[in-house]
Length: 74
Image (cartoon, rainbow, N blue to C red; front, side, top):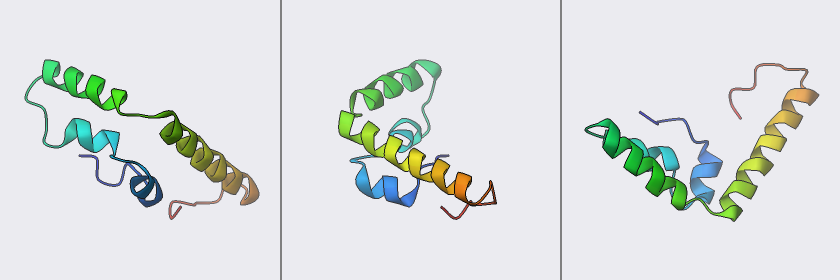
């Protein structure tokens, strides 16, 4: 499932985790999965994308500063 896919910070900031919208409960067939993906993508706002990019830039910066050390806790 999607447990742990979205960081806690992003879960708090987002209206809903796209992964959870798509995979919980598990779809019964491929067509249902496609439909859920399309619906979930329609809920993504420009603000949500902006926050995700900011988080990604932060994590890349941490990797750079730590020299690529193990930073799973982020």
